[in-house]
Length: 61
Image (cartoon, rainbow, N blue to C red; front, side, top):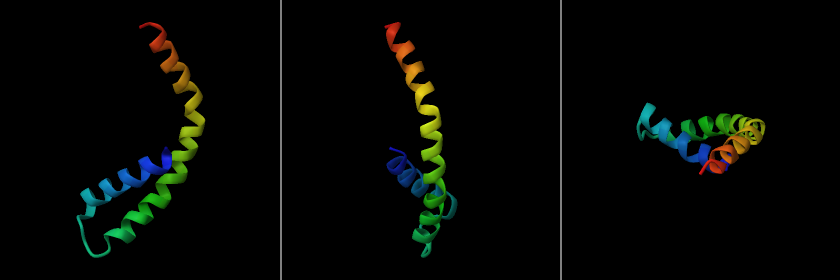
């Protein structure tokens, strides 16, 4: 999930920041290669707590 999310979000943010210029792909891939490992670690660390929170919320309904 972190792969797909960071892939598309980095494209979107890169487009917002620099527009669709000739070196867009280079900027995008650079941003994505930095974002993916960070998102993967954050997802791995936060997933158990988020799962528990979602379970508590869903148990109330």
